[in-house]
View: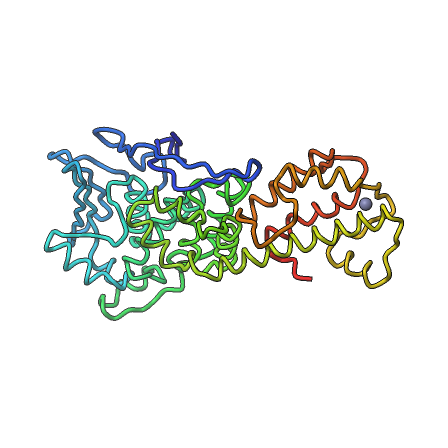
Length: 393
Ligand SMILES: [Zn+2]
């Protein structure tokens, strides 16, 4: 079981990829609400929960005369209530009138949000706190988990994507006469910082628990670079049989998570076309490398144009290169079932292929800390480029 930043056990793990081993870890931890009593959001900045006479959780965000309570019903019949200032909400959140209408009929539901998740409660409290001008709570975003950030993006949509906070000067205006402040509700930079922190702590995007959800967060807050990185990681997982990490995600996602992941086109054909291009590219370069080794063994030197092709593909031998016996190379490729070379019949993912090539390299005594190099060392040096899809010589 994993724990989030509050030290509470989290629920199911959507996806976490161990880059080094080339394997994806999936777990289905039990949902956990931590039992009775106050159990959420105690250690973080923001409104603290209380327990009312009926044993329900209450967040009082206003002490003014005007109040509107949003009441969420949990599966265990417990309720979580948020006591809000309606005027404040009307001035900041575009969807407030609709939310209030539903709150008065006692039926508040939020699309894709499972209210029993502690992360959902965190996100609702956080965004309602911000709506009430509690700007400091935005700092919590910098230490949020991927699932918490995803819930924040869902709640943000539910509130109508508020853009600015209310300022004291706005007190003089009626709620419908909006005078916007220039203080952003949540800046995309804050969300980007949160994602960056997660990635650096986990030492890589695919090592972050539930990293796929960061794609949704990035999409909602316009962080195109993060979205591109998530999409790239999915391309690396696409296999020849049409499956990818998305299929594994589908098995463990909540219906809400799956709904929002589906909206991003992460199962489009273009991802498999991209996979095909990268696989072809790797096999083409490997073929060039083998020709090079054969030629050198036969004592044939390359002409200028062939040497240029090797250089473009980063496999040209350098002055320090030691010869690589053809037999050794073929044996290592055979052991990884990569010989004879055939990009068309290769069914694995780009990740699988890069992993197999690395294993083949290690079996030939080639690793990144080796003192000497040979043409295969230079070929392996392309791994980062193959995994980002940026080699298109
Ligand atoms: Zn070399």
